[in-house]
Image 1 (spheres, rainbow, N blue to C red):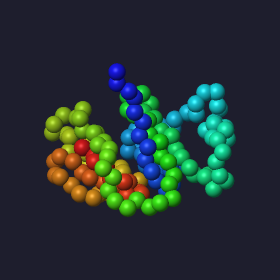
Image 2: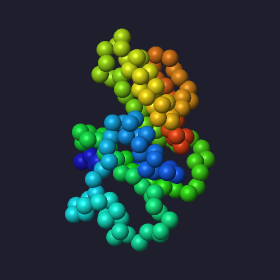
Image 3: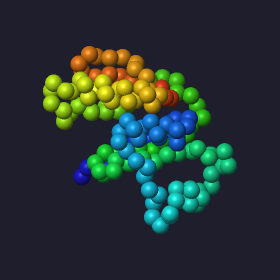
Length: 139
């Protein structure tokens, strides 16, 4: 039996970084678990310190296909490349002649949102980093 997965991304500013990843993935904010009306109400049941005001952001694929994404606040800095990364496949549905244009259009959108290009394999994929340096590919 297969299991569902969720992904957790360590970061310094989850709610700010969530805006970037919502744009990158087409995700939206995950509603709080029932019966809670708000995420704050749900969080109140846990014994969290007062300095955890930006402790997390919860995102999901509105179509219910992709995994959930939890951005969790950590204090320590990112020290090396993570071994797991996202491949954002924007060109899979595009006709072959339009695939690279679709990749470049998404890259331009993510650059405007604070991402940066790390490396490019022309006509195949572009490695980018989000505003906190987490690498991913656009293909």
